[in-house]
Amino acid sequence: MKIDDAKLLEILEKESYVAAEEIKKAAQFIKDHETSATDYLLTAGLVTTDLLGQAISESLKVPFADLDSRPPANDLVSRLPASFARKYRVVLFDEDPKSVTLASDDPLDKKYQAEAKSIFSKKKVIFAYGNPGAIDEVLLSYRKPLDTQTNQIIKSGERVAPAIIDAIIDDALAFRASDIHIEPGEDEVVIRLRVDGLLQEAGRLSLDFYENILNRIKVQTQMRIDEHASAQDGAMRYEKDGHIIDLRVSIAPILTGEKVVMRVLAEYVRSFGLGNLGLTADQQNMFLSSGKKPFGMIMVTGPTGSGKTTSLYSLIKLLNKPEVNITTIEEPVEYKIPGINQIQVNKQTNLTFAEGLKSIVRQDPDIILVGEIRDEETSQIAVNAALTGHLLLTTFHANDAATAIPRLLDMGIEPFLLASTLELIVAQRLVRKICANCRYSQTVPLAQIEEKLPGAKNFFDEKMVTLYAGKGCKACNGNGFKGRTAVFEFIHISNNLKELILTNPSNKDVVELARQEGTASMFEDGLDKVKNGITTLGELLRVTEPPTYINVKKAKPKTRKK
Image 1: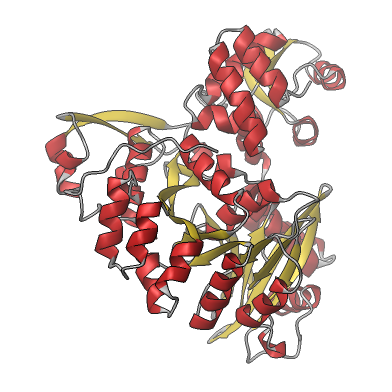
Image 2 (image 1 turned 120 degrees about the horizontal axis):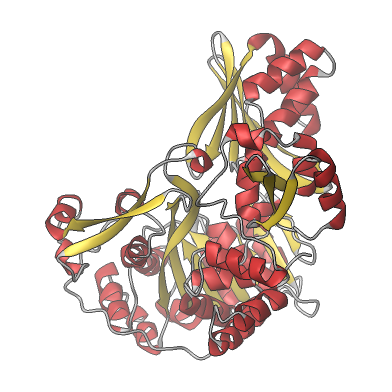
């Protein structure tokens, strides 16, 4: 049986893993934010993944296979036929002369049990529960390296180009890559995948097959196959096991040919909710309460690739109701969501952000999403739209939340208009998460941290500090990190900040007042994640830096009503 949210909360309360009061709070939070029970419980620190597994296995009255702490060796995993393992999402966890233990996220499946007993007919078969995410990791052991897959495809000689493209996309999905790079060189083609923000080589191909692969991609994305000197953009859909994967494709001429980059807009990205982003419960409440306002502007700032659009769409999903008209203008449209009217910028037809926004305002919208404010004209129209009864969500390139205000004023927006419309500014960056499978803790003296972080005493109270890192294991390909989360800075535009905006303030003025009202910097938000073992100090320092205003006292944040 599959465990739904209500059943999971019932199990945790019944088995006394989580207090009844916390369960009630979790149920209400899940209902309000449309997030999953697992996401909330883990984010709130009420449980760990292994604790969840133990609670579920006790409820099902089966053993718990802790695949995170004791991942089975490849030679043990391979004893179970790949077809059976993938079909039922089951892995061989343990074996001795008399018995085998099989781990599944649905261990009571009678059909799976019957087939398993026929495979291991001479041994006792023990059926155990394993966490779904951990099972996915072990199932990757059955994947052959991309080089091996492409060589087998080439030897078969049938539909080489389509099969190789499928193999590359399958690998990207299996390893949860965000981008696929196919790069022709002087002698061969290099295939690289961006996983958790970093590129890694996945395989190589002979140049002999590249032209057919390139043409196949151009046909699927409706690009011109006779154009080789200009950049082209397109999109394609890939179907796998009943799931539809959208890919945004860019082809650009380089010295050695035409390079292909595919942005993977997979379901594991589209399915993100506020609970998946790394937001605390208070931050989620602030985001959602601002999103429920009838008008105003919510702005998310950060560099390209920092997850701004994902954050806005996670909010949009919660606001997407039949009685609400939501319209977007984007370049390009990344996530296609039913019930939302999405417009893509088209410079060839003069459909710019500004022109598109003018049209949207005449389409009777309740909520408008502008992919990015890039120029003065767009900013003026956006502010006026927010002022005339629309909730406007947008992204903006700024180093932090406070910088957005003086930059918008510099773009020509009147201070009284900005003060009247701006509701919330969120700044964010992405950091890699420590691999849960090989994470370990170490206690180091504060003086040692000072070498990486001058002024560390302003952020740590102890003389000996516990930090976390990943040793590197099979689950994370040896690099100690797996997955990404975000660090945030939230500035809610209070009445005091509205009055300050009227004075055309500097970045420093905004920071000082925001700090007095409880705003924590991205670095401080990230430091909480460092202390909680989610990421490392080195990773945090890679994407952000300590605030220069540490002498400005941060007030205790007030709890905001929904």
